[in-house]
Each structure stands twice: as structure tokens, then as C-alpha cells.
Length: 171
Image 1 (cartoon, rainbow, N blue to C red):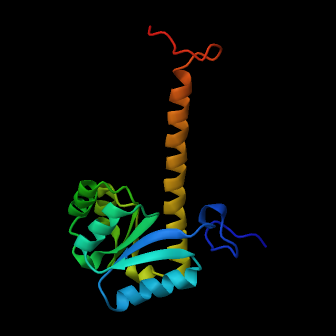
Image 2: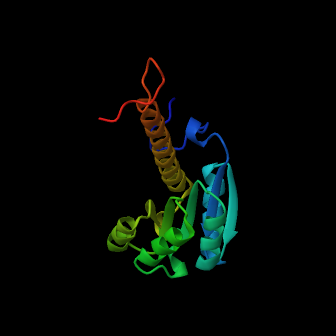
Image 3: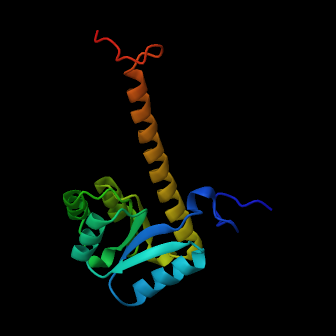
């Protein structure tokens, strides 16, 4: 039986076969324990760094490139713009997955407009839901990185004449 897009397959797809480097920013307590249990039940091979406040999250994101970051809305994120401003200030381009309280409707839209990759309602948090979210975010990031690399290579090759390998003339 083959896995559908919506269920976690028995073997991770190619995009998740290497360990993921993820940041978990959540206050100590039940939510953090729930997130850790969901990650474990999802079967995601993850090298997880855990922090309990936003300044430490910004510091970690500024020092290391992560595949994704799981950030709990209980850290006091407001509408998400200060979060994205903080990330831009440290030069981080890590995709963020927000864990929100209650209906993520309007708040989720505001966070996504601010630049958050995805939002999960705490009530919907399960291993399968978290796996799908992480998979989609990581896959989208890796596709974007490949596309940017391909574009840079194309531009570099277009600058040279195909026969002589000399720079093309300026028109």
C-alpha cells in the first residue's frame, strides 16, 4: 500500500531522509512536552535545539541555519511583525511554524502575511499533522534553494559565449 500525501509514510521521503536541524521555542510546561511527544510520534529524525524565550530564539537563529523553527505563540508574538523584524535583524531565513491557541483563523492569516511559513492550532497538534507541516515547509524551502542555485548557474553560464567561453559582448 502506498502512502498518500496526507499520511506519514513508513519510510521518510527523500527530502526528510537526512536529520533535520530544528529549533523549538516554547515556554517550559505542557505545550513543550506536547510538541516533543508529537515530534517523537511523527518519526522525524531531528536534531532539536530548544529555547524558552524569544531573545534566545533570535540568538540561536542568528548563529545557525535551521531547516525549520517551531515557535509557540505563548511567547508573546503579537501579530508576528516583531517576530519577523527580529529574524530579519539577525539575518535568519529559517521557515517558521507557529503553534497557536484556539482558532488560528485571523491570527494565522496575520502571521502568514508577516512571513510565517505555517500555523498549527494547539488543539490539532498530532504527530501526523506536525509531520505534514514540517515536510511541506522543509520541502518548499529546499525547492526554493535549488531554484535559486539553478538561476545563479544559468546567469553565470549566460554571461559566457558558448563556443569561445569568453564574456558576451555588452549590447
